[in-house]
Figure: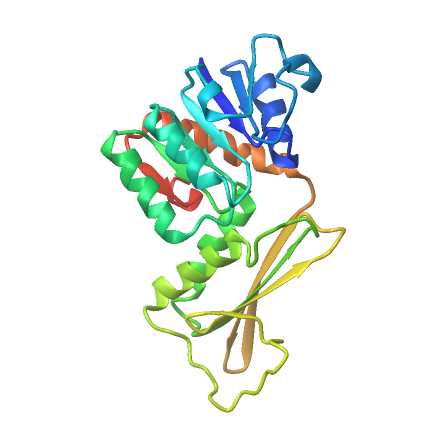
Length: 258
């Protein structure tokens, strides 16, 4: 039995994670954490009486194998650092974690021989899209990324879009060329990661979509992924939990365990 504590349990992804853990006979939900909740009674959240509810680190006495984090960008680093210091294996789905903080958490987990996963996206199709984009980048020099998310998403670009750009850049080994004559007073050309343009859309009706468009002489290639239900992320979350339990190091990117 793998014991799990969920941070950010009241959010949309946190609720899906709680439901997945509760339904899985090989997982046990032992605790939940959110610094903004006022009630610490599990019944107020439809949880079993055995589940600890916490709104401060000092209250957390429950031992857990996995710290599953779907909190917010401003809190995820402190959360994961706390988990690692107490021997819990971090599986992090919260986006917006800066690269230097990811590296610091990786070093801290590795020093304790703790497995873990930091995933820009737990959607299997999204991870496959990133892998395919990396392969295409070896043959096509120019790419742009468009990501579409719900209006409540706080960070932009999304972790998935930024990770996709990183994979393309790593594959190509150089910045994509820029047009020095370009004029864009409104910023309509989007963000820029080593010459790779990233466009972030925030609108009701979307959950999480992304497309990568490659352009070559006389041809284009579009790789597109769509998410219509957050439940689809739970397959990747389960894979992340299993990977964290069998490894002794923290992996950045779900694509590196598929």
